Every structure is written in C-alpha cells, then in structure tokens.
Image 1 (cartoon, rainbow, N blue to C red):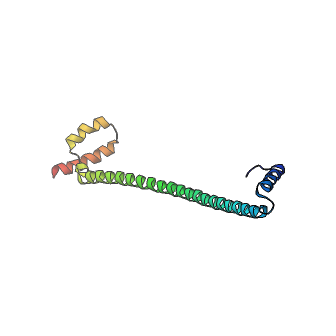
Image 2: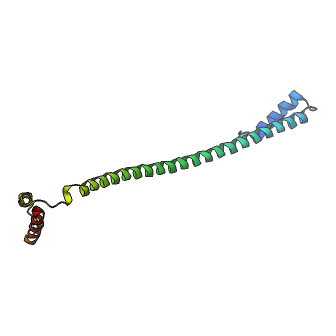
Length: 136
C-alpha cells in the first residue's frame, strides 16, 4: 500500500519512543495495529462490495442485450404479420373480385396482341371458354 522501507519504520519508531515514552509505546503500538487492521478489513469489504456491484452490472448489461434481441424479434414478427395480413387482404380481394371470371372475347382480343405470349392451342381454349361465358 505505502512504500515504506525498513529505515522509515525505524525512524517512526524512534520518534514515537521519544514523543510517547517507553511506558506508553506498547499501548500505542497495539492501538495503531488495531486501527490498521480495521482499515484493512474496511477496505476488503469495500473491494468485495464493488466487485459484486460490477458483477451485477455485467448481468444487467447481458439482460439488456437479451431483451433488446427479444424486442427486435417482436418488431420483426409484427412487421411480418402486418405484411402477411396485407398480402392476405390483397389475395382475398383478388379471389372475391372479377379476376376469376372469364374475360370476354372482345377484351381478350384487345389484350392478346399486347402480351404476345401463349400458344395457339392456349388461345383456342381461352376462346372456347369465353364463348361459353358470352352465351350465358
């Protein structure tokens, strides 16, 4: 703790012997030893308490990190749920809408040249399907 060598201790002992006297020197040494022991015990207790508080701080930091991960997962889950709900709503609108109804021949003829996709057999099947719808 203090960097006190042999010669410093000897000088302190000689000064204490001259100031206090030989009769009171043992009592002074005993009292000084007790105070030093109390100070060491106090410092040890404080060190232990500080170490336990540091450990609690580390635990709290880990908990906060875990909680932030959980909160991020909840945010991601709610965003995904909202996106799935929007897709479901769009699909419900498409299913309940006019998409499943056959397209009339006049409108299909107008759309087909623009798309340019599909084989001749597909076009004939579509025409046959739309003709039956037009008759109804």
